[in-house]
Amino acid sequence: MSATHFQLDPQGRLLHFLTIEGLTRRHLTDILDTAESLHGVAERRVKKLPTLHGKTVVNLFFEASTRTRTTFELAAKRLSADVLTLNIATSSAVKGETLLDTLRNIEAMQCDMFVVRHEQSGAAEFIARHVKPHIAVLNAGDGRHAHPTQAMLDVFTIRRHKPDFSRLQVAIVGDILHSRVARSLIHALNILGAGEIRVVGPRTLLPAQVETLGARVFYDPAQGLRDVDVVVMLRLQKERMEGALLPSEQEFFQRYGLTEERLALAKPDVLVMHPGPINRGVEIDSRVADGPRSVILEQVTNGIAVRMAIMSITLGNHARPAGETP
Ligand code: NCD
Image 1: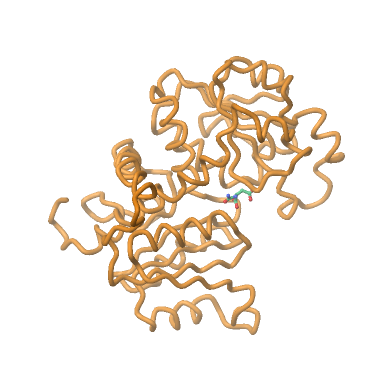
Image 2: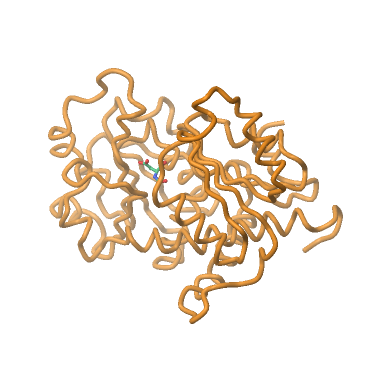
C-alpha cells in the first residue's frame, strides 16, 4: 500500500499526514476550514485551547529547520500538548543508532504524535508504518518528496486573499527539481481546482515530465509571470544539487530573480510568496521580499493555525473508535 492510502483509515479519515497526493478536496477544505476557526486563537489574551491536553508531541528533526520546527512546536503548545523537540543531528543517530532504535526509545516514553523531518524521501512514511497504532505521524519534509503542511499553509494563505481558486493562476518559480514544497503545492492546487499552475525555471532545475503533475512549463519568466495572481519563489537548494546545475547565483538572479520590474508583469494585486529561508539577491530582490505584495511573513503566521488543524484532525481520528463518524 502506498503512502497515499496508508495515511487514511478504512473510512477515509486522516490518521497521519504524509503527503497531499491521493487526498480529496474534502480533506483539504476540512483542514482549511478548521485552520480558519483556529486562526483567531493567537489574538486571544490566553493563546491556548485544551484540545491536546494530556497528549505528548515529539518533534523529530533529522534536518535543519527554523520556521517549520518552531511553528509545529507553537501549534502543539497552543493546543495544550506537552512538546519535546529532538534535533537528531546532535543526538544518538550520530553515535550509530538506527532510525528504528531511536523510534522505539522515544515510543517507550509514551508519546502520541511524531512530527518528522528527514533528508530521505519516504522517512515519515517508514516511521508511520513502524509506530504503535495510536501514534499519529506528520511529515514535516522528507527529502525531495513532500512537504504537505507547507502546501496547506500556502493554499490557506492564498485562500484568505483570493478565495475563488477556479480562476487562479499560480506561478512557481526557481528550483522546482529539488523542491518538496513545489511537488506538494502542485498537488494541493490541482485538488482544489486551481485555474492554472505554471512552473518557471531553467531546464536544469525542472523535473522531467513535470507536466504530468498538472503544471505548464515556462523557461522564460517574462512569459511565465504574465498576469498571474500568485508568484511562489523557491530557494536554490544547493545542498541537494549534485554537480554544477547552475552557472552562478548572479546569473540566476539576472535570468529568474523576482525584481520589481518582473513582478510588474503579474496582476496588480499579485501575492508574492516564499516558503523560506529566502536568499536575498539570488531568487528574490529585497524590495520585493519586503514590499507591499509580499505575504511571506503571513505564511509563517498561518503555518501555526494550519499545523494546529492538522494535529487536531489526525489525533482526533486516532481517538475515535473505528466505524464512528466525526
Ligand atoms: C522549505 C523546506 O525545508 O523544504 N522550507 C520550509 O520548510 N519553510 C524550503 C527550503 O528549504 O528551501
